[in-house]
Amino acid sequence: MSTCRLHPPGPRPDAGLLERCRALPTSILSDCMARSGGICGVHRVPGGGWPRVAGPALTVRTRPGDNLVVHRALDLAQPGDVLVVDGGGALDRALLGEIIARYAAARGLAALVVDGAVRDVEGLAAGAVPVFARGVNHLGPYKDGPGEIGGPVHAGGTVVRAGDVVVGDADGVVVVPRERVAEVVATGEEQARTEEAVFAHIAAGTWDRSWVAAALTEVRVGPGVVA
Ligand SMILES: O=C([O-])CC(=O)C(=O)O
Ligand SMILES: [Mg+2]
Image 1 (tube, rainbow, N blue to C red):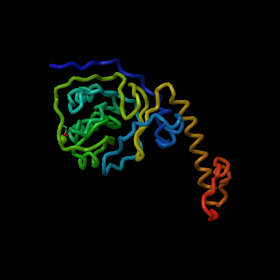
Image 2: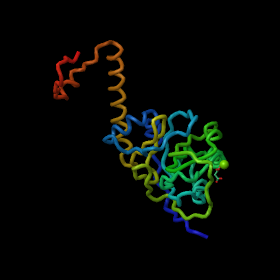
Image 3: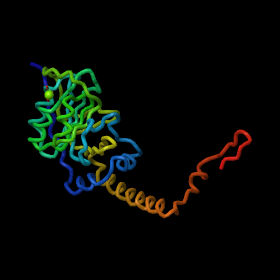
Image 4: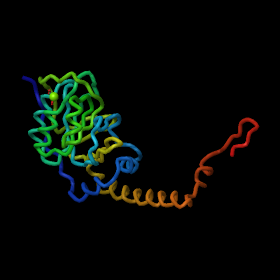
């Protein structure tokens, strides 16, 4: 027998704010947090074409290469949760595959985010639950524990706490701290409007480029003249 430390459940985000988060690209959300907050190196599994997903984190820290506590977390998860598994970034053994993904779908989870490897990727890509991972390995996990559920974890350079809002799309995964969601969403919506205006100026040939030269001190080298 090994231990699984269990923390109290995290807070649930406001449903309206979650919906607004889901409408914003991860690139804009991380921009609105000083270009930080990403779970770096963790991406949609190959072939997975799911739309953007957002939900509160249910955090799991597991011994690298072992998924016993991941199984326990699946039975504690609430519908809409994003399971964030801190597997120490280890790639020498997969932490989950199609069986877990199908069970996660049946339990109503929104997504699986793994700082580690996964397997059965063709089955994952065809499945209902988006899966994000650092890598792929056919070697399977052990089931011995130990681990921890609901505590703070570290994934791809970012601390994730239960109830933080996790958003994943084609660019990767970002974590919005639970007390910053309203502020980040409002700033993100403003940035999205600004980007729409830039797109319109590009299409019309009216984009003011003067800021580029203003930000540079140019040093000419050689006899040629830069066009
Ligand atoms: O065997 C395991 O525990 C992991 C796996 O491949 C699956 O979930 O399908
Ligand atoms: Mg499998």
